[in-house]
Length: 359
Image (cartoon, rainbow, N blue to C red):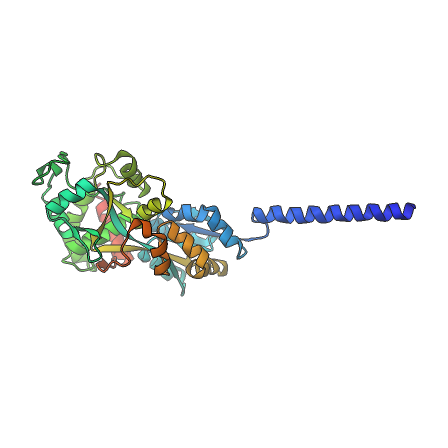
């Protein structure tokens, strides 16, 4: 009898231990205890993607827990101590190329990208169209003609000086609101666009060309007055304060598409997205610094689930059909023909530093 009781008690205890182990493993898994933690440093505009629970779960299926810190793309390439990270993921190809050279990395991944765009409103678009500054692109989308915009900015044209302006007679200069060129990648991409046009439609590549374009491109930033250090700032002003404060806001296409896909009502019927002509793609380029970082890059570039999730955040992925399907409510063009490359990292840095010194 005692033997039977002992056996029964042993069985109960064994089952209890097994239950604790199973429960414990399940809890650890939920918190990433069974996963390989991979640390990376990224541009801030990708933080929402990496911290989304669906993305966390997708990485977990491959045995990874990806932790990220954020920094500006310029800082990633020049100031951040990359020794403690498995990957660096700036938002521009020039910054990634510098990291790649400095760290002697042979392989990089560009799992998604976003062209630069301008958020505006229908009355502003109609006014600029009437003045020849906005026209239709090849895919029936609206484009802001940068050459004609630069002519207005160079002359110091105010909104209330535009012929036929009865909808927005503001006594301030016609300017696109950007971020601070000393800190923000989107401002660097904007500088790439306007310097290309100011240089006679050629990528700035020599000191003489830098000196030639500097006065006109610096004015575009300095005449704005105070500028914020993240693209979220002017975009949130655009969404909340409306046309009065921010008639033209430089954004990533992904920001506008993300809000449309969410369907949260933040993009109102009178809001419009313009593409600059030319535009520049902000190419989110992952530089792996360890084998685990390389695995993150591979998954972002090839995993269908992660690709679809990136598209829901408005990023153009390696699968154009996937992006087109997800972004359909935003009615964005499948391709932008009038796109140019940014200058080299070194040229862009010199231009940004020269503009920064004039503040």
